[in-house]
Image (cartoon, rainbow, N blue to C red; front, top):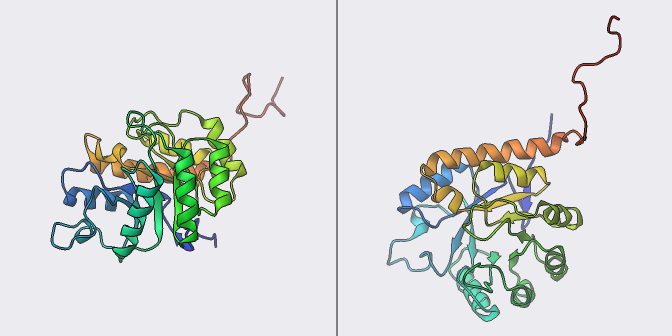
Length: 259
């Protein structure tokens, strides 16, 4: 009997390789429905933008049960290492655990990460026992530096956050996959199901997305599509694609054909 193709993160196994965000939906009810349709088991939450700490106000965790889903707090909206470290500590105090998506933004227009600040924050948070997943450029050097610091995974962007451009540099992503000893999670810029499949065909371990589902004309149907794209892309990678050739190659064997 074949072993289940699970995804390991922070010492825990997951059946789904799709991680979804919780922003930009019309309400928490739609958020929950989209998460369920996506099949995701890990849900990321922007600590500074979505309430998970004040029980006196409407709380996302009333709709997304932490007993059923792993909550992945993120430091979205932080522009310095100090801000990110403070936000991470706040999330842990709220009782959502040590898993953390570390995001330190370096530019308001592109929302590209500030890599030096990310490395600075990662070094502190790893020492404090956080399971750090850093959001990075598609830069093999930056991802290696984070891995060497003890980050539990690396999260290279596919394209700018929310752009929907898909994977702009598949060659760098492939290098990152080949060199990494920790999971590689494509994060940011996914637009549609084919982008998800492409990430898995390149050998990535997981994909994190939000806008591609929340911003679709039919978010729930797109959540279905993303779930199926994960399965298709992962199976295609495991099956092994045929080599690319410049010229045609007959599908049917020529041996034994009558003259």
